[in-house]
Length: 110
Image 1 (cartoon, one colour):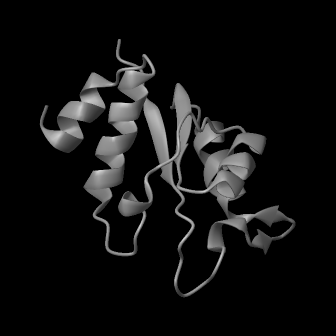
Image 2 (cartoon, rainbow, N blue to C red):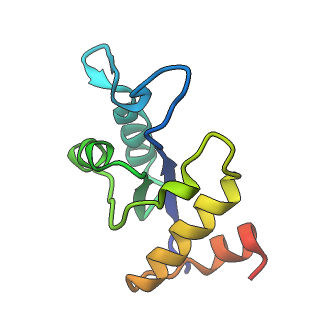
């Protein structure tokens, strides 16, 4: 049975709300709610945060997400298509020894 990975995007360059993912909401950074919800769902074998920021990576890890790599800045702009960071994340996971063939097939037609 294939395993399932939850991918959480969290880039650092929000233009309208600076440091949006690190802003506190009811005592926790906004990012914590996405990570916690994904983990509590019980459907993912792994929750991975894709970010270009070391600070965001630290917060994601503190709340239980894996951050095995940082996303290149070129894939973290306001106009970067989602498929680019998703493909990057799946490629990096494969380089690190974790393959999610159903996700690869569903998102990039591999």
